[in-house]
Amino acid sequence: PNTSSFATYIYKVLKQVHPDMGISKHAMAVLDDFNRDMFIRVAEEARELCMKQKNVTMTSREIQTAVRLVLPGELAKHAVSEGTKAVTKFSACETGGNQSTRAGLVFPVGRVKRLLKDRTKMRIGAGAPIYLAAVLEYLTAEVLELGGNAARDNKRVRIIPRHILLAIQNDEELNKLCLTACIMEGGVIPNIHAVLLPPKGPSHGNFGAEY
Image (cartoon, rainbow, N blue to C red; front, side, top):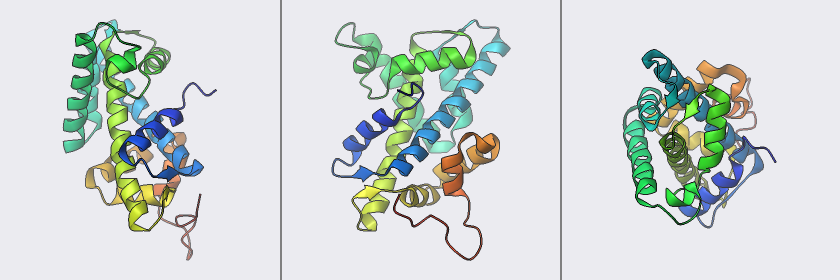
């Protein structure tokens, strides 16, 4: 299995926000790329903060500051709230399952910790992966909720890339976040990059295709 993929967890979040909605393979790939890109951007910002402060361990404090730097406006505010809530819940729950369960999360805290270690080559404090997993889960839920609404408005029961495009374009902060991501990372996120780019030529490309 692809240990860097969040697809399994994205699907679980979908079932929380839109229990009766499905998602196409290509739309899932777009959201998986979105999560990987957000992970990279926050992890890199947090690493830079640690280096500036000469910290050898990345904590939830660096993740929180990185989130504020990466996400715009209300997205940052709500993401910070979700991250803080997850860390607090984890700290208050000494037993009762794995790290994700104790933090009240669907997204995989253990996997996020491994990815953070691999990406930053730093020591990772207990709170950092919990905070970041909560932020990724929050962003995923936001996109899925809006994408599902777009699908329903189009009388569909399955989210396709076009619905994600509509959801992002109609939300000022998500649009700003994703367009910046496309510009900054180039080919790192090809699926969402392709969805967000305007169609070439007289046709509308694959935006309306059933993926």
